[in-house]
Length: 161
Image (tube, rainbow, N blue to C red; front, side):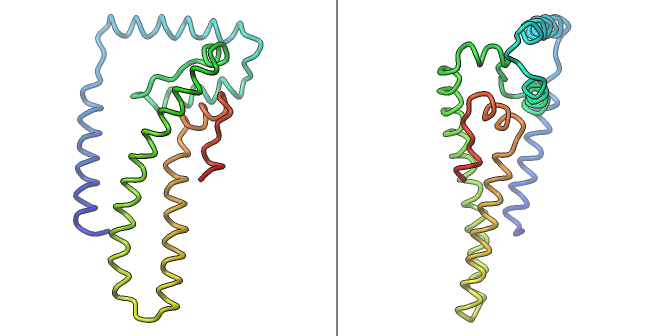
């Protein structure tokens, strides 16, 4: 990892730390969130369409995606087409960000290609670079939120990567 990548990563870490520090809730906001959670629990428990697998994925998505609004399974099943549209929009925006990050990484890695002398080693390096880039994409797209929304909407982005 070169110096600019390290500095970029440090900056991202500092930004994330500041975001976490600024997310303290007031008592009123905490009560409001508890009421929403209680209502969601009642809806989910009373709906026979919701499986325990859906519930666990929903909870994982909620816990890991605090900056995203995660729709409950009942709401998604009731408004499936709208949630599919919203999920597609999220994926398009997320893909742009991921592509920028992976392309920067690839660009840094391509600089090392000039140091390789033989054609067969260059070809092998390019193949391994492409494989590693695909793995990076899969890593970005294997978050609990994406898995949950893929399950609920039937849009499995990992199959297309």
